[in-house]
Image (cartoon, rainbow, N blue to C red; front, side):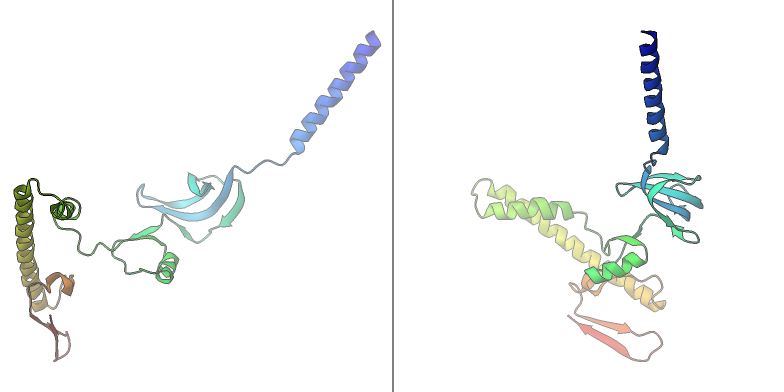
Length: 210
């Protein structure tokens, strides 16, 4: 009996040793899918500007570390800047090839944002236009609906006056050689029948007619 117990204990000990050897010999699974190492990380939100290692899992940044990281794939960014994608607030990259070129400049979000919206835009787009359609199909409460349309018309007259104000401001800027001028002819064509555009450094005038 004693001999049998000794054999069993020996076999168990050998088995445990083999398991330990297998665990020690197994390759460690990388903690991150991708590591961008040794790059100059610039993060405007946190004001970070230093050499760091960036760990990415499932396409998302999960850690920015001062210490080296272990990744399934590693990119050495020595001498390069690692930063969040830039946002272009006024872009005309409206097709795939233009957006592709902007990506090379680090731009990952492109917005137009030239003229913004009017104060009444939400009501005009969602509420008033819906009510205009409803007018064609409903006979109830038409007076109230018509009064709302009158309010919308009055708002348009206010907006028209604002176009005039924009043009007056443009004229002032033109007199000072276009300093700080940014607008679109489309913004003011409703209220103007003729515009003369002076060309800086030239003696001719370019005319535009509505």
